[in-house]
Image (cartoon, rainbow, N blue to C red; front, side, top):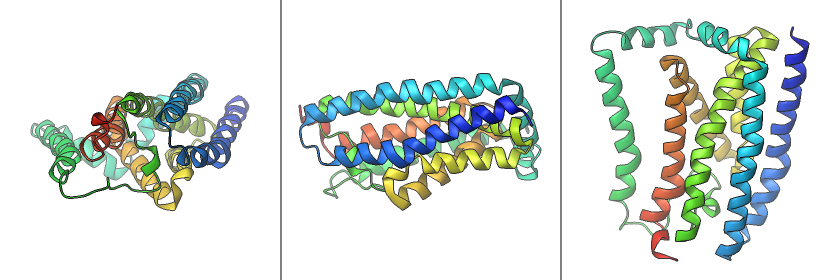
Length: 246
């Protein structure tokens, strides 16, 4: 067991648990009571900076601290039978075409329903307690973009790349590495309530599969950012009419 990796893992897990159990829930409870868009934008701005500093810093620390385990944990996980079978299928001549078709269907599936229901409902549908989080005015939308992109980049670098490598350096077990990181990812969304935790955990599992199948962290980064942009920008504009509210 790598003692340095174990110490770093303890620090990272402690910080993430503190964010989930204390800061995130406390801050969000206060944020939900805010009515002034000026006050909301100040909080959005602080959250964007803190995400870059804290999650970005943890990402950098885990990747640098466990760099030697990044490739081994990926290689071991890619040997799992279901992952190996999908990778083999994508390696066939028609595999790339199927992957592109799935990607197009996924993007259309995220965007088209929002546009189709824009005139038939009064309130944007949400999964978990995130309604207060959605931007309400034109000025808040820019923070929706910033938070979505930073979440896609920093959370994927941390929970799909750095943290699994760090757990693998301690345990030598790829299942524990990706499962533990995915559960922590879900717990980070504690402020969204039980449904939000469940949905985030399932999404985390999808991001893991994408990373293992493609072997590239860029793919889950892009999908994560796209899903968050749908929630934090597209839905507020199309369903919440945020762009029309200066």
